[in-house]
Length: 125
Image (cartoon, rainbow, N blue to C red; front, top):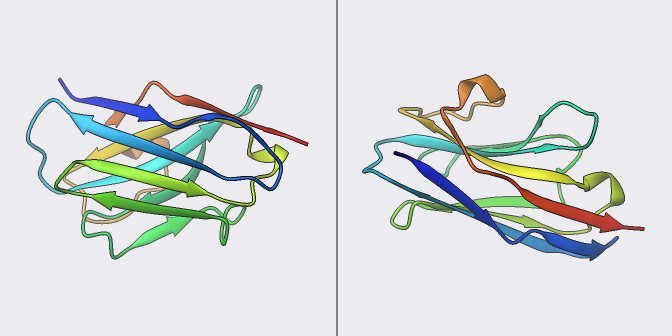
């Protein structure tokens, strides 16, 4: 059974930084894309950033471009999200997701096969 475990969430003041990590385990993976989504109270889950299997392709939501950076380590089956210049509107539960057998960068939740349990990020003003 595939497991995705996120870590690194917390409370930070506006303008601060946080680094989220996600570790995948449970079986041997082939090619897969990974992404981060977030969901604020009363809102739909939205795409934040994704990265291809090779790491050469990434996709960012306009709202986080220039502030967030995604990276991955295929040896460790991990993906990190460095979040800088955080804003109160970044407050949400952040979810890590994995799309197996995928070489591109999916941006829709339904394209992903596995999800983490989520980690809370709260940015105070």
